Image (cartoon, rainbow, N blue to C red; front, side, top):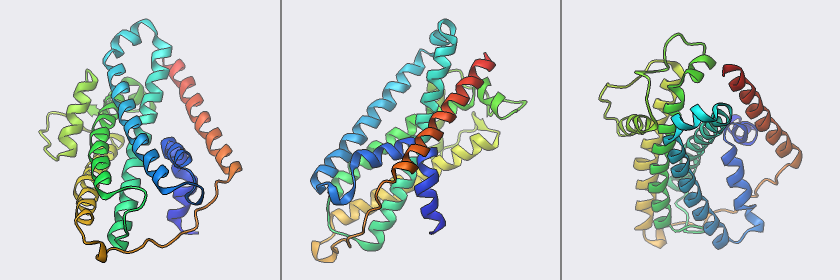
Length: 259
């Protein structure tokens, strides 16, 4: 088995639980009608975007929650950060693999029209801006600084609110780089670099690919080859879910100690 497949099958669902949820909701290829699968994908994208907006709104009241409900608010904060990291990784890998497949094979429209894929790309572009803003805000906290045993804030200067995180996210993905906020730790540098790459693949590669194929004559497109979809291994699925819960519980304990 290739290293790429090992990563996609075994590690990615743990790093990105939303990737696992998306796979389960879409259903297996042979058991799901293409039209239904396309509708599920569009519904998932809208749900994730709405959820990202909701989580962003919750963080606006973070000072209030952290003061009145210190432990509960930090547990919720941890879950929000985990969700945001999960989504940005899922979006990057999904669009990377899909756009590379479409460039190579140029298949006919199946579960989704290429015009629909363009709209999904734009929505995902907005979602990763919000999610990276949440991640940057999380990295600027003393909790993140404590996790990485850093003497200095991971992002300098320390972000006062989630708006500043989104502001830095917009500057990063658009490669403006005003220099007023800087990532000065490998973790913040990693996510800022990944956001730039995500922006390139989403807007330049994926969007341009779908837009081009949308106006490509049908005679130049190919019928997609049928690929046997791997069945879900229930034991592996149970193991991955157990690891995800273990990670969350472990970090909750760490947060309680940090209080």
